Length: 340
Image (cartoon, rainbow, N blue to C red):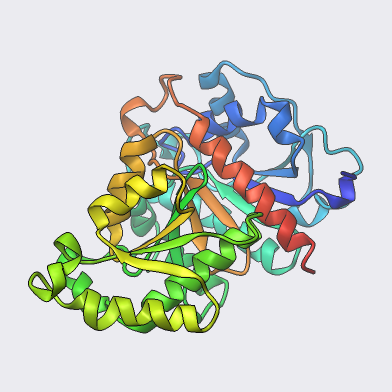
């Protein structure tokens, strides 16, 4: 693959009080991963140096004036580094969620999204964030996905995907109280979640994804004796999807469908609420999982775990999920690059 055919993937250092900078140092020390993209690392120079120190790794980078200049590089063997002053070292207290750290993460992400809108970059992979810190730092939305959607001008359906290897999940509802989840179930939301994950898997290189839809109630409602959502809402949504050519199956009892997916019968599951899929995915591979921000005009990925404040600064961070997130960003960024 020539340099011009490589997707430009922006990497961020995440919450400065967490393990993000250490993870990115470990990621960029793997030449076989860096070769998949024209990598643009953006963030505070002191934080990047601190991450390398904690990881015990020195990663050569190439200074670059801006994200807009990355695509024109002729030598992509070293990651481009775009220095951005967002927070001073004395404002950051390791393992603490603070406004300064949250504002720093927001500023870097906003710069990446502006570059994506300008077609200067093809994908974003961000190190772990802290939602509370980001809200202290000025985020006005319930989570980063809604912040991304607002910044990118998205008005159509979007949702988080969680992935583990070849298994992906989408959600009909996400960061809402569980008592509200039933009220958010409707055919259109289920169909939107199914269409979105089906098409996103195609963008990730799977031509004909096998998608299952989970039920909502215990035992799939037991024929209506334990809830009628499966009969009145979910099954009709599945039929309408099939009628329009989206070959999803279900609804299936949520406590067994992940066994079928684990064994390879399905590549994606549409779940009805946040923890229905999250518990299963994290139990099967907490250190491997990836979150993909679905429904946005640019691929955005991140490791599914958090900032790991409990081990920040100790040199113990596991890079596997970050490497998986980067690989997905590269594949989806390549698809976006070739859709121009």
